[in-house]
Image 1 (cartoon, helix red, strand yellow):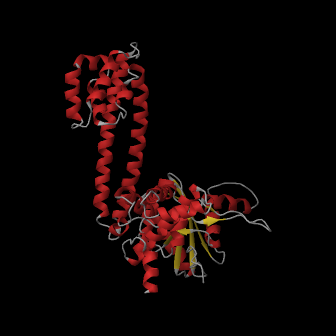
Image 2 (image 1 turned 180 degrees about the horizontal axis):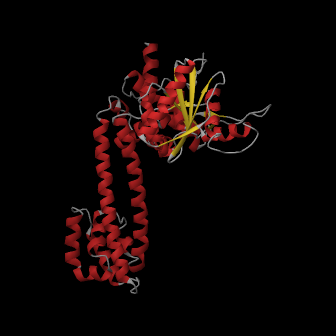
Image 3 (image 1 turned 180 degrees about the vertical axis):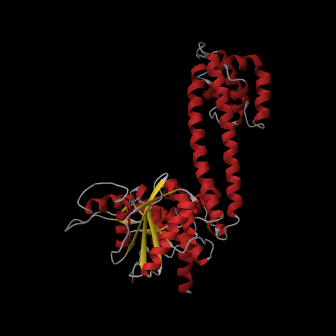
Length: 419
């Protein structure tokens, strides 16, 4: 039985024009080459519509002069600096591909037997890699998928900012009232943030009196706070070991951080609502949500990272995108163990790992498979990674076949065959 391999540049032939670009923040370097070795000297162009149009006219001119039928445009992974140009080229009749920087570094050593790095050499190296067929197709998210990618990235940044502020708040408030978290465990709860904004010092809490403090916290927490918690907080405020010196300045910053954390949480909630809105515009989103263990926020991240599952022809392509493709190092009689490459999108890999953790819990859809792996001696982390790979295969198959998830499908399939 033949293996399904990641689709590389099988279309590179005598009629293919290779366009390599060395991406920079303000200046890019372009380079054209044909498969028979004809090329032009690398040239520079900048980030502007006029410069992009000039670059494209040069591409078309070189194509006409050499009678090419197809244009392949490749560049290294360079973060946000490539995005404006990528979106410009995505509207043109070209095939966009991406080159791994690790490959560039190694091929660069072969070119002239020197680690020399220049703006004129780099695009030539990218073209060499494309000619060898070691570049992968770039999927540019469009429409709702593009919005989900931006929303997911914004949510990651917001959570990171909120976590930093929460840690800072813990440190500052501990100086003036170290016993606070013994009574109220989470400083991000509504009760804690209210007190930190309006009554952050132990003296403020004592000044309210127990009855008024209890009434306020009952109202703010919608009845979830218990009387013994309030009593412990009130007693701790009366016997605190917090310092007095420099307290006013600390209180000012504590109030500010509490307000910022509250605003950041509201912003995260808003982002998640927008994710839910855009998911409804993606036809296969409900298909994937039928898998028990995948929620809307996770799915928004998956689609945002992949772009569109329907644009991939084989599961191997998505495995490589996620860095979940397997490799081994074997030589002679030595048989190496298989590992995942980790050369894809790290956040996509992390999302799948967390989904796997959800599905291997007791009563989870992958719990039995996970237990079998553990019983057969597979390490726990490797078992979770194996489940991640299986879930990605399931998602890809469901989108391709437009089906919903069916638990115990293999068992039901065997029963139908036996009937």
